[in-house]
Amino acid sequence: MKSRILLAVALIVGTFGVLADKKDRSGFEVGLGLAQYNYNYFDDATTAIVSFGYNYNNTWGVELLHGRPDTESNGTGDYDVDLGILRGLYHLKDEGSWTPYISAGVGAMDVITGETDLVVGVGLKAFDTSNLNFRVETNYHTGDDDTSVMVMLGYRFGESTPMKAEPKDGDMDGVMDNLDACPKTPVGKAVDDRGCMIVEKPMVETDTDGDGVFDKMDKCPDTTAGALVDDMGCQKELAKQVSVDLAINFATNSDVVSADYDAQVAKVADFMKQYAGTSVVIEGHTDSVGRADYNQSLSEKRAASVAAALANRFGVDASRITSVGYGESKPVESNETAEGRSANRRVVAVISETVSEKQWQK
Image (cartoon, rainbow, N blue to C red; front, side, top):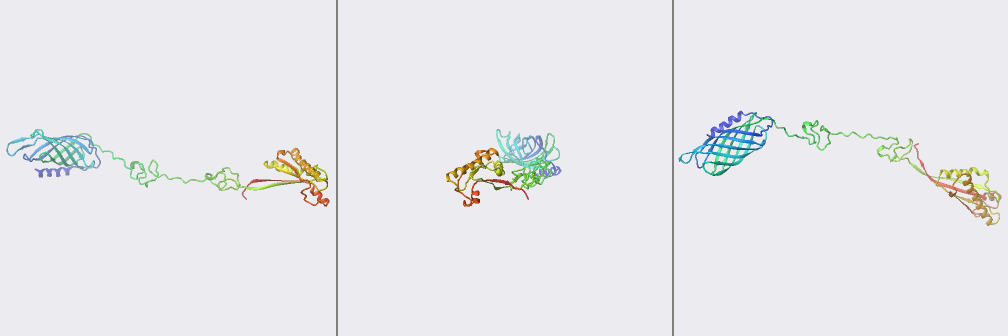
């Protein structure tokens, strides 16, 4: 009997086609087959087997087997055994034209009242391109150390439709292969919606004001054309000392400013207006003729006369003007000659300012 079963297995498996695609095998299933039972307490027996089952998916299923083997025990007479097995199945492959599987469940025979066995088994199931399948398996019944071999032809209800393959992302760029226009993108590269690398366009450097410093670094973006600039794009400035001198001479015993010196006074006034932060100290002096106290007073009057001209005639704020007299104490020439005494009768001033001068390209 075993040899006939094995021959049937070889013939039927050889006739089943190879499934090219992964099929959905879920649904209800019925089967019809033959089983060879090898008992310890009964004679070996062969019986037809029917099955009713449900496959949850391509991996898990459950089924009920039923058979009525005709056997006898030690020559004491025939027994009609009513056999049932309820078990679960686990298929080791979820695609292809065949799959090995394992099963486990409980079985019962009405010959031995109330006895149930744990039944475990292994098998091989083959599929054709329709809803048919063929399987062969062997089982072990724990209660009495019985074994069995079974072949069965099964039919699954429902359409045999290909299962959708799980989407794959071969280059791991986040775009599935079926949508990936660039399927071999190097790992870690940024890609667009098509799965192709995003190529960053080189930045075009601009220099809007044309000063030689790019806009992204330019802290003074509106520099005047021709300006000499620093690394930050700002025009360079040079610190510079500027000054103006005042030198007025007076007649003997006089503090009147001659009209001949109006141009000098005006020049000083213009300088002070241009540089609003400047102030001036006007120094008055005399020769040594006469008493020292008289000369001191005269020097102060001469300085005050020039200060008044700056403020009243040329519009310089009086708060920026200071006058002081030194009498005959600071001669610039010898008082022994008429020319020397004329040089010493004077009012002088020096106004200076440090300014920043913008630099230009040459």
